[in-house]
Length: 201
Image (cartoon, rainbow, N blue to C red; front, side, top):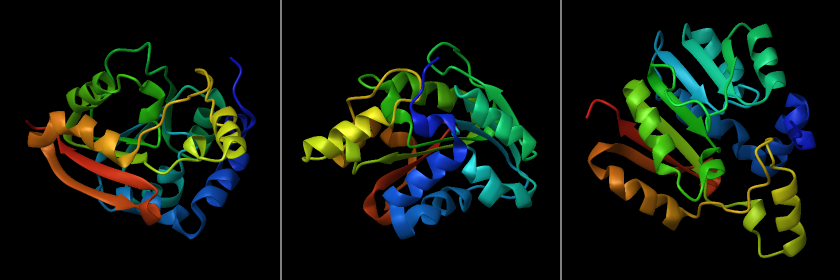
């Protein structure tokens, strides 16, 4: 399966993300890690190079499982001491159960209809679903050159993504879950919006 260069190499991926987020790079992970108590079980959907685990959760006795389409990322995660599975979220119906089910910067892959993925995360979570999604995106830049670069280099192997969330369209999606929303906030210098949903109904 052909993927863009940044998805083939975890170090390149992280370097690009650091470039995009600048001084807010670490904060985007800390915002999620702070919501997860020591000893909890976590399933990280579309985990990428599992930076949430390696930099923030590994030292806290968290039972972490990362799911990603990229076998290289999963191999790296397992070598770092975590649990991981190569997983096609589009093809596999039920997600593994955990106290907390997390997704960061990946919900746009399931546009135009991302709600079924949110529903499957809620079905798998025993306590909370934590979703953080970019609402300021390179791929939707007004500059056509930057937009083309953003679309080309964010292909995770499931096709280049031309759609992205804005804050308004992300809020619109989560209006259907209003009775479950326990927190929402902009993080990472306003580049991402964080939603926390109560999975217990």
